[in-house]
Image 1 (cartoon, rainbow, N blue to C red):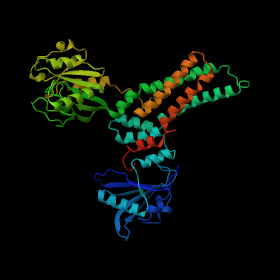
Image 2 (cartoon, rainbow, N blue to C red):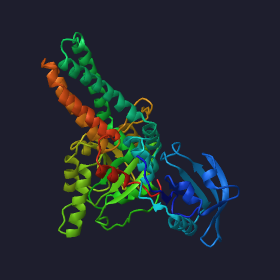
Image 3 (cartoon, helix red, strand yellow):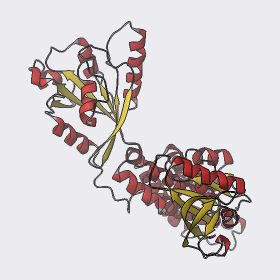
Image 4 (cartoon, helix red, strand yellow):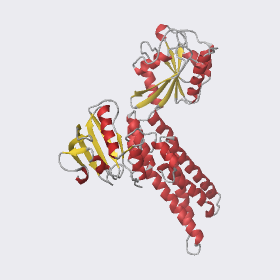
Length: 458
């Protein structure tokens, strides 16, 4: 699908830099860019594809605006499979905007967020999973996230989906042909082959579903909630991990009333750390809201760090928090042990069997043990992005799960020795669900929603 209009946008950050890039795409890209660019030699439409040229941008009265380098990539060998021109100008918001304004006056249209990648998808250069990988790559905050995004961008999800769909479609075609012409289609041996195909497809889909948790952790980070009663050192722990005074720390209980969230790298892992309000009984309406938010975040956490003030006796609030252990990974930090120890690990063991670490946010004692515990619980070093497929968002997971459930119904019919005519509806449902994952049979609203999350110029 090729568009009639030509689009342009600033493709680099709005923060000042030495060089900025303006991207133009469409069948009139060369002609319209030529209206504002004067090359040292020749005209843009006459230049060969994948060449670099030097010249000037000039305004409508012929005055020079900036000295530029121009890259030309002609269809179909470009990111969008359309003619693409990229203008490298001097950095600075004013210069970029002035050049973009001249292009708009020349007849280009301002691109929508993600429209360049959207055109790459609609023009068949990439599938929907690869398009999502582009955004994941831009937003990646760890080596794991980068490697997984590059793996998806190379088409590892698409290849696996195409493989499974091909197996399903071959079986559907054989069944329907046999039902239409039973006299000339030999079904001998089909049952055994079909059973093996079902087991293969179900196993591959199950592996993708099982890998979703790791895929989400790779992309979004380990959702880590710091909790405890007021004034046990939660905000101090956040500041210590970040290496900066992000949270206000005072001796007054209840200083943190809202949620503070920050990302931090721990080796190759990304932690999405959430500092919550102290959980306790209170009549303060503002504190109640903060405590409710804390409990809600705990219910969605991947890791809970529970702080206990070891320099004072256990309180009923401490005991309630220890008893109400959630299903997530939990580690108990006996904080403030530099002030003297009144709470021991043996006392904690009466209420929980979770990991216990002697800790001090003031001296840093116990930090290494905490890091080792997290790395052990979320051990991802064994991951090979060449061999494993990690789906990273709910849309992808839903497509795989729907396909898996459809094939499970086929498997049940097969195990009950029902006739082949019972299989095809669910087989085609599985086939179409996987098609949604790579962008086949998706509606315009979904496409607009996905690409609307992209940054301008990508």
